[in-house]
Length: 77
Image (spheres, rainbow, N blue to C red):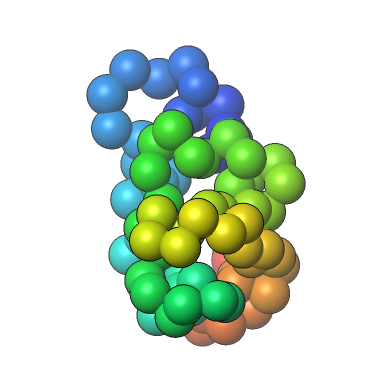
């Protein structure tokens, strides 16, 4: 859903904002420890391959979505 929204919906993507807000403390480069902010242009690789690149260091970082969601206190009813 997040990848589809980023590719096909014009303007800002709600799923990108949700990820940046909800997982801010976990989205850090594993090499240089800088914060990584998901951009709409990176949303498809993030949602499909669970990868984000660090803008500061240039490395590809892996963020398993299942693990990220497990870090939240989220109840689905």
